Image (cartoon, rainbow, N blue to C red; front, side, top):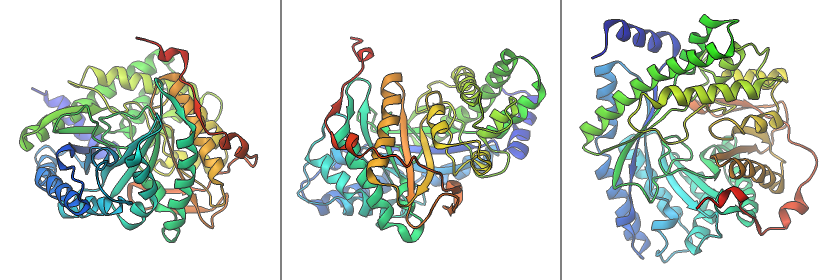
Length: 452
């Protein structure tokens, strides 16, 4: 039973330092929905989602009220649509995305993920249909998120898929140009995608998962930053220990919410994702944590080392506080969603190249980065390839969520709204990768893939 001191400490974290549960995400299997008839398939999906998750938002709000813990998002992830739609007799899967969106609106959830495809080894006709449908699907829906996995450590990198995704990102930007390319903010390209990620836009319900499960993503960068203020000037050993203790406390809150949500919804408890997910709110920033360690500005020399320490300590501290840890777990560095990252870009200390270096040690990759609208599909594909290589070689998840905003140039600002925040448009190398991307084929799996 929690001690009064611990209860007051947690309340202080919530009231003063933006501690929250960032999301409870219900993963729903759609494998029983498959049907060759597109209309029946869409109806099956809508009914399956709305029936299974009918109490999700209500339960989340009840837990918030009873425990005083903010739960910012209630979300759904589903089986990758490319898999369950394989037998559909159709040339487009846009109606499926629209059925998902109707279900999300009906339930009141913030986002629904799983308009997804796994093509690290070529892909099938269903995969190709889904990928082709992504731009229109994201342009005509509000709450649907899409993801495509183009590489794994075991399979290597499918460069044909990488090239295609560069084109898809550009097309999505064009179709949502009137909304500052918001469609691209709902599209992630992965290497080593995980099956139990509760965070959008890359969440999907993996084929190895059960029928229905609750996964929880915690947050709390502001809490960690505040804790580090008490060890200013101390050795890094003390910094790491302070982060570990703080991550333990944050994760216990997430574990409590996960247990209650799963019990009340009558579904299996899944995992706790330990990721420190920032918001545009001042004080709720991963960049500010790094600067608290002694960096003048996020992005200066030492930033990658500081982020590595933070990521490792968060995992070590949270691991002992949760029954099951999964998802991405560590620290996110989405530019538009982190006030400190935005400030660092604006003052010139944080560049795209430095962000790429940081992704070697953080949880995901190049996330929510606005780039000039005239950035070519080939350059976007080459950036995806670089991130995929980092993930494949290091046997970790990496991802790219770039937003090439039509009509915008370096130095302009883009407003996405809500948790997606706003972003300064960042510079991209002026040197071309067109010939490199045109090769296609496959970058083979590294020697470390031979572990059996």
